[in-house]
Amino acid sequence: MNQRGNSVVVIGGGLVGCWSAWYLLQQGFRVTIVERDCVGSGASSGNCGFVCPSHVLPLAGPGVFWSTLKQLLTPGGAVSIAARFDPGLWGWLWRFARHCNAHCQAKAALGRQQLLVSSMRLYREFICQQKVDPQWQEQGLLLVFRSPAAFDRYRSTVEILQQEYSLPVTAYPGRDVQQLEPSLRAGLGGGWFFPEDTHLRPELLLSQLRDQFEAFGGKIEQGTGVTGIEIQQGRAVAVRTGQQARDADLIVLAAGAETGLFARSLGCSLPVQPGKGYSFTVSAPSDMPRRPMIFEETHVAVTPFVDAFRVGSTMRFAGYDRRIEQHRLRMLRRIAEQHLRIRLPEKLSGAWSGWRPMVYDGLPCIGRSPVSNVIVAAGNGMIGLSTAPATGRLVAELAAEVSPHIDPRPYALSRFS
Image (cartoon, rainbow, N blue to C red; front, top):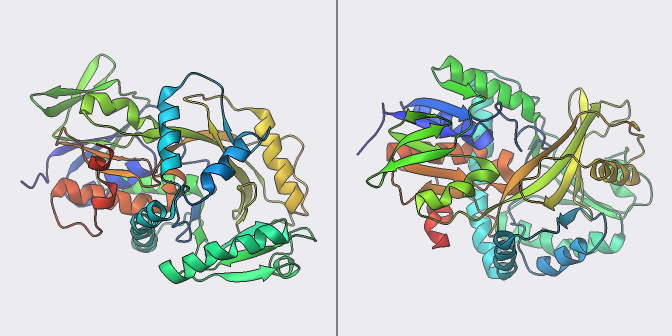
């Protein structure tokens, strides 16, 4: 039965929640976003702003578990786990290890690719039709390697990306990479350039998307924490916020890394773990890089915005810890300066940390829960910005019971049963 015209409460004001709300509005629903803090306050605002079709391969792949384990055992490494009793994380890691093979990687990549390709098209449509400017820049993405050996090892991945997913990639070995990007230090091993990747300023996008959503009649309630979903006779009837209950015909659960906390009440498994990331943003230096880059051996990313420069990354499995650890920001700066000729400020301003919603198989959770009028949209991991528009449009199509523009089966919650 088509439910257009009914009321929808979207739990979560991050990128996935906002894009879901936007496309639900286009389908004719009455939509309210309920956000505990402010729109984009979680992982959505402080990321490096990549819109990357090149990120088609999931984190889990052949040999990745052992290389990740090596990083975990390296003090101050980009990947780390806080020492604590956490059976949920241990189970997640065990399942991640089981997915580190070529078959699972290829299966996840197909699901990721259709979200990535669709989202790129939807970004262009939104920017053109709504006449907004989130500092969209088509400068590609450069993966930089310090050692020639690491550069050469990545060649096998490039062959997969070219042959299986038709992605254009250009090699810049040795000194050639510095000619492409003069801000790099001399003596690096090389780089692989993905010309079709783009980037934008996440904070601007969120602000403009919020403005458009409200201009078209959507409502946003910030500073409103959700404590639970009220279910009667197998259907959700309200969203609980403290002492109040907000009635809803349909609920979209887009609570990022905290989505799994609602799983028991919905009668399903939602294996979303918080992977804590860090970034800092400084004023644009005079010799700022021309294009965004990832220093692949350490997975540290840098992004030149129009008027600022951002350095970010790390993956810290520390549970729901909100602290900003200064030594991790110093690590980001040190790695950036090992690759770049620029000198960053000693005192770092614009520090940020947030929880990426990580699922062990590298695919988001998008679909109806066992409580049929609750749709889950979470777990986009490290490609949240790159896949959020297509995720939101798919949510709206499932809600309206119209033919989806992409195949929804790879993201179904039933795969965790």
